[in-house]
Structures are given as C-alpha cells and as structure tokens.
Image (cartoon, rainbow, N blue to C red; front, side, top):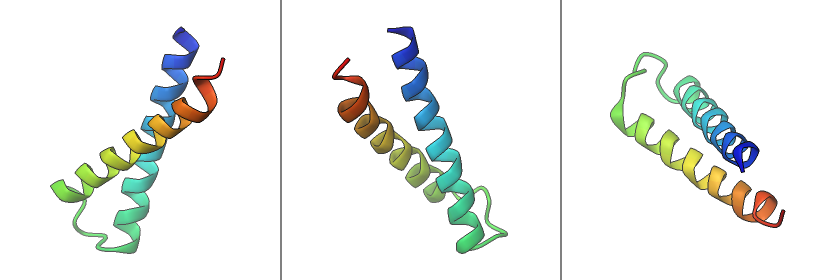
Length: 60
C-alpha cells in the first residue's frame, strides 16, 4: 500500500508543478504567484493522480 500512496502522490506533485510552470511560461511570465494559476495546477494534479490511481493502481 505504501508504494501506491507514494506513486499517486508523485504523479500529483509532478503534474501540478509541470502544469504550473508550463502555464506560467505560456501566459504571463511575470505573474508567478497568481492564486488562480496555483489552484488550477493543483486541481489538474488531483485529477491526473485520481485517473492514474483509478486506471493503473486500483487493479493490483
């Protein structure tokens, strides 16, 4: 169970950071602390982690 939790958290963390950095480079480079960008990045990370858990880890 520990590897499942760590891998899902890793997917969440990597996808949130990647979405945040990618979104800032493509929209407004000077607005790094925009709360809406942070919220959207975290929500997308949650969705991707849930999808990863649902389709990959839940079957084992």
